[in-house]
Length: 429
Ligand SMILES: Cc1cc2nc3c(=O)[nH]c(=O)nc-3n(C[C@H](O)[C@H](O)[C@H](O)COP(=O)(O)OP(=O)(O)OC[C@H]3O[C@@H](n4cnc5c(N)ncnc54)[C@H](O)[C@@H]3O)c2cc1C
Image 1 (tube, rainbow, N blue to C red):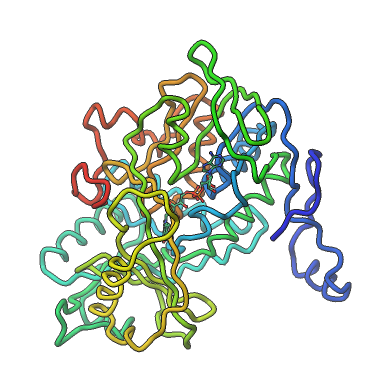
Image 2 (image 1 turned 135 degrees about the horizontal axis):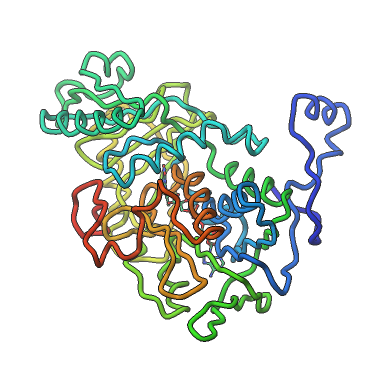
């Protein structure tokens, strides 16, 4: 989707509706305006957000919509959607058990539920359910604890026995398998959303409210005067700013280093895969309990799946064959019929892995510089709440209550949020 218009005036937005569809059908589709303005960089903004991924764009939208701050620029080094927002496996859920995480991800889930109306954009949010399989009594008990924690927060969770999982997904390996399925934890409100439509929807809505979205504009340095960030250097010239927010996901360490900050983040590549299209077979999102594997079916029919990160630090947006083999083995162990399918495409994205597997939404030691990072495997589902809470922080200088645990200093104080219980091992979260 290209933005054709240039300039800096706030755009007027055609409302997408059945009526506009009908009118354009009769009009030869000639009347659709560009979805967002392709703005030219200005000399100064109240707030500059670095990174035109899901989190940067949602931050800009909520700054304008919730806080009335519209003198905002989103600077993106490539094109919108070129990062992880356009590369993920589209799973959304709020099935978290740690106190720091549960209210945040549920806030995100509730924002997903009203997102298409809020943005007037079809993000194909599909609450088809997320089913986490268990294979042992110990896993069942762990899922029971997680489900109870969710229900205590008013979040839907159902513990299913083997027979109920079999009704939902008869194609799984229940018997005569290395890891027979014994049951699952189901969150019916979880599901999928179309990832790039989320970026386009936020971009369009933010642009209409007056935000400048500037593509092909890489931040190459910070202007720091007396310990305070006053703006950024970019490939399209210097831009002054009252405040600067970083939302650059896998490039976090690299961009932070330009401000002499060393962060508890490592970058790793995560691969994803899609098969040839087949008739509807998987009704929901299914995750394997005996390995790291998750799968769902796209509306085009392809099975979309993924597994572990490649396990070594990398800035490459492509992975290697040992991980491809490992992912496919997990898939075959969970769902043997996968072996009859051909893989159509695979790709990779750079993940910002934090030391405890949870994100950071906080101020940095540098006055005027704010950080949104550490999303690991789970940043797509967080897109609405991350933007909501980062906008709140940028606008008010206070953490939003549902994101108050996502402090940068928790790695010094020991108040970590280790949902997986894996310890300080970014490649294991
Ligand atoms: C294969 C894969 C599968 C995944 N599956 C899921 C899933 O199913 N569910 C889920 O919740 N999460 C998933 N994730 C994680 C999720 O996609 C990310 O956590 C999330 O998208 C990160 O936030 P973002 O959208 O803002 O990142 P990005 O889209 O990566 O945005 C960051 C942007 O910053 C830009 N940038 C970087 N440096 C600069 C600079 N110097 N100047 C200007 N711009 C810069 C980049 O070009 C990029 O566009 C997955 C990730 C991958 C890679």
